[in-house]
Image (cartoon, rainbow, N blue to C red):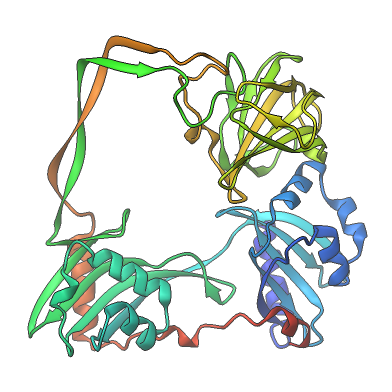
Length: 420
């Protein structure tokens, strides 16, 4: 609540002179260098908890963030997303004029919109040209992919749709959610219902929903045949991956970009896959850390080690010991924090690891009877299909105007930011 109040005070205090600018993080730029470039005192780093400072390492080149600046281009506030729910906030207090640091929930506005386009060529191009929203064009095209054959469109046909869009700081935030579509093709109207969970469109108000039936069957499988192996011989998960977790030491909500495995101090830590060690040393809140590049944009991180064995630059094999469990850094007890990053974005490690793997175990075939799930499908009503169709009909009858997204604030170039 405090963070939301601060944002409101900042916006209301500087309402007549402030401007929101969308920026992109520069390649190779550190958080400290960003502060220096913007004239923000380095002393603000002293206000940052060691546990929070680990998130500076997860800001990547090209990442979008927002600045609130005054008429002279001086920073009043900076917001940098950590994940889809939390963000770093730097702000200058309107009263004390000193800069403060916090990690707060991401706030955005959700509104409903109406759009209608006339087909002149390809529907995707028509939406972009007539409404100015590429992501909207992509989502409408995806919704119609299996519900309507695009080859049947004729010049002069109309496509209308009802959707919602999140915006943040005057710019798009995420993709739009299509709710209902009407196609007027050769003078005949056809309504397409949308499953809002998947964004897929259906001709009618029903869809096929999968369900499973379990039975005993003979199964052939191998141990250790998954994407990555487990980092410990025996595992006990003490804290799962979470975008918003109550931190046991800091006593605040913070993202948890990894999985914690409880283990005794000194337990050997094994590489989850083949790769090259790109970091082996101290990393503030993470303590002693090893990072391994597995190729294809995948990097694994092993934190809080009591002792590091792997050397930077060395090539390690899956199951090779790279260090030992400890509780260095910000830690409530001995454990291994395992993080996995795909193209610099954190992913849930348990979605990347074979639960059958045992480190360096030998592949072997096993045959036994197990419960096997088979998938079948049943016809179900699409949630909110009738209500969304009624809302779209209401918009059509009222002759509501299409919302043109060309009015959306365009992000300025990096070099123009200081002259705003």
